[in-house]
Structure formats: C-alpha cells, structure tokens
Length: 219
Image 1 (cartoon, rainbow, N blue to C red):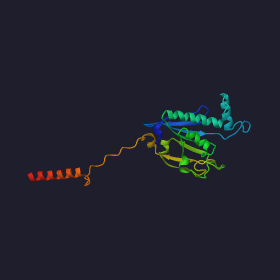
Image 2 (image 1 turned 90 degrees about the vertical axis):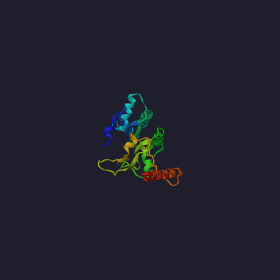
Image 3 (image 1 turned 120 degrees about the horizontal axis):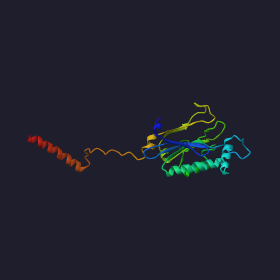
Image 4 (image 1 turned 60 degrees about the vertical axis):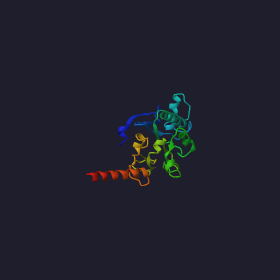
C-alpha cells in the first residue's frame, strides 16, 4: 500500500508484550503500536501457561513484582513519552481487556496527548468487541494530528474475513496529511479583476481604455 515505501523501522518491547512499526514523513515519523494486555489474574488463580502468568514470571526474573497489567501500561506510556520528545506521531491499537471508555484507561492515554478514536465517532455505542463480553475492550488511541486526518472509523462484524471471538476495527486515514502536509496549503492570490467599488481600479481602467483609443486615432 501507500505506506510500504515509508517503512523506517520496527521493534518490540523487552518482554514481547507489544510491537511497533515506524514510518517516516517530511515533518514527523509515525509509530504504530500493537498491544495485548492480559486478562486480570492473581498468583494462584491462573494456569502456568496463561499470558498473565508468563508475563508475571518474566518480570519476576528481573526482580519486578508489579502486576503485569499495570506494568505493561507503565512501559507503553514511557515509550510513548519518548516518541513525543522525538516529535513522532503515535497510533496505539490493541486488546486491553478493559472497557476502553473507562476513566482509568483514558486518563492515562490523555496524559500523553492521545485521543480515544471510538470516543470521537461512537461515544454512546453499546457495541462489544469480544463475543462473550458486553463492552468494547479493543481500542485505538492516536495523536491529535492523526485524529485530524481520520477519514472514517467503524467496527467489522464478528467472524468477518478471519474467524475470531473478537471483532475488528477499521480506521481510514489521510496518510499524506499525517506525514507530509502538517502546514496549511497556501491559497493562490486572487485575480486583479475590475471592481466598480474600488475607485483607483476604475480610474486606472478608464485611463487604459482612453490611451488605447488615442493610439488607434493617431494611426
């Protein structure tokens, strides 16, 4: 697609909890994060092979005793703050296993200047993004410049294209506006047409007509 020629780099966080891909533009780079935040558990309440338990062990190997759900947000927000310092635009998309309209989640992203896209387009929706759930737990947050370039946004039906217990989102963007056109386009100057309400122009026009007539008479 249009972004393929804009590829700059890609990477993942230390524990493999989220990955990112970066695209370059004339003004700013765009970094897109793909995140999976595990379902809430406690020690002993989940099996050894759940994502929460695996991330818990990885953190403990580094002498970190934080809950994996809170730690992933802390790490992600730290990376986003670094992006902002480097003048990068940001898109964060993922399964957060939490109501994406909750103040807890949105306040954290608001602190780094990101906007909840679903709040822009469907703030009062009763849709769900997990087939056995009742809330939207999959969401997208973007920088203000990216939000201004959104053309359309919506939800795909369950089981659309790929069998899954989650439904997909779509977000169409004006890529050129994001990566190349941060400054407003300059308008061309207006034509200098004759306006009868501008005396100076009327006098100049009358004079030019008289001059042309005098030249013809002389000939």
